[in-house]
Length: 169
Figure (cartoon, rainbow, N blue to C red):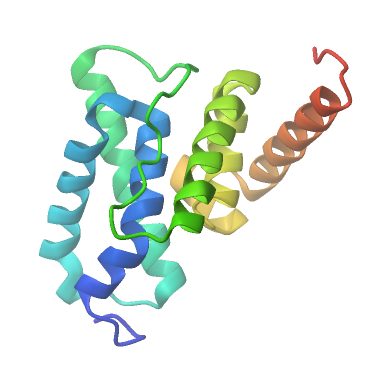
C-alpha cells in the first residue's frame, strides 16, 4: 500500500505531466501510448506497492524506462539525440503562466538533447525535470551513484561552457 495515503488518481495527476515530458524527450512519437502502458502496469501493481512519494515516483519512472527500452527493441534501434518538436504540451486547464513555463521547458529540453550526449541528457533530465535523487537515477539507469554524479557534473560543465560561448569537446 502507498504509505502517504494518496490515491492513484491524485498520483496520476501529479506525475503524468513530468512522465509525458520525459517520454516525449526520449520517444516523442509514442509518448502517449507508452505512458498508457506505464499507468496500466501501475494500476495493476498499485495495491501491492509499498513506499512513499519519492519511491512511487522512482518506480513509475523505472517502469517508463523499461517500456522505452522495450519500444526501442521492437523497433530495432537505439535512442538518439534529436530535436523534439512537441515535447511538453500544456494541459488545457492550466493557467497561462504554467503554459509559458511548459513551453520554456519544452525548448530547454529539446536544446539539452541537442547539446549533450544521450547519457548525460538522460541523467540531467531525470534529476532536474523528473526530480529523482541520485540513487533513484542510478537504479533506474543501471549506473552507480558515482557515475550518475559524474554524468550530471559533466553535463552541467558542458552546458556552462556553451553558455559562455565556447565550443565543447
